[in-house]
Image (cartoon, rainbow, N blue to C red; front, side, top):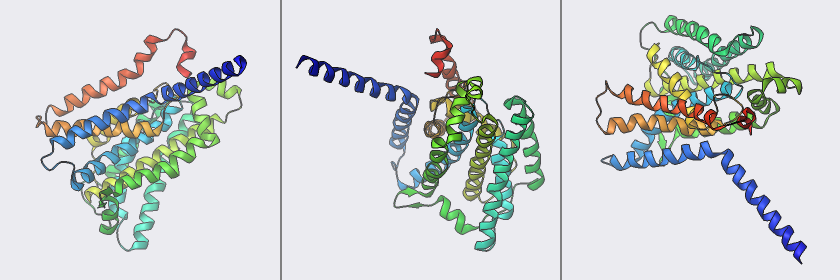
Length: 340
């Protein structure tokens, strides 16, 4: 009897510890979800009409753009790298889409495919240079960012262009209070992020970020994993660029826009619980981190802050978010604790 009770108690303790470990592993995601829920609820409370369908749809359309860029940033970060070109790929594909995603349904579909392929190719170029050039990702992506921005200027020296109105309406409208942009984001999570996360190459990305040397010694295909991470980052950025075109009906090669989305994507990644040292985190957390960052801007607008001061407050949030990734270093005694 005593032995049975002891075994039951031991099993319960192990189950409790296992549950606590799972919660601890998702702590960053849970915090991001909680912060977003509180901030967005307050944002809705401050709206004169409350959380109407139009308010939710507008917030979703803007938030999904940054969420897609944050997802793109997450993939290289998981491998221990970073991609400072996600913003310019976003702008480049926006300019490209404003030129070719027009005309008949067939031509529109062909244009969408070309935009996505170009985005993926830009990411693949980053990955190939990082792997075979043996250069630091930050250096590579700064250089390619300038190239991609130059191409955007060639495509769209002045703001303009258009997009198939039926496609734009399909991507930005709200049906029964459900924004199409959120459906697109959920589709990306289901058909891009989850298969990647559960694949051998996806698990390899986590291993590389935790310890590239150990991953190499274990026979992990490091080069292939890194190239795929940057390629998918380019693909996700191109989906965001296409969404921007659908939202604005135009293309614009604006350096400030690219820089804004790149920096905010880094903040969103950290707020969502992904370690800038690699090996830990999730694109789901980055999505909620992006919505937190976007809601900060919306709240500043609600409070009628001077537009000149808004970048100051967003910059403070950005600095605080990035600093969170370093605080953990001050609390550890053994470097191996970073990967537990």
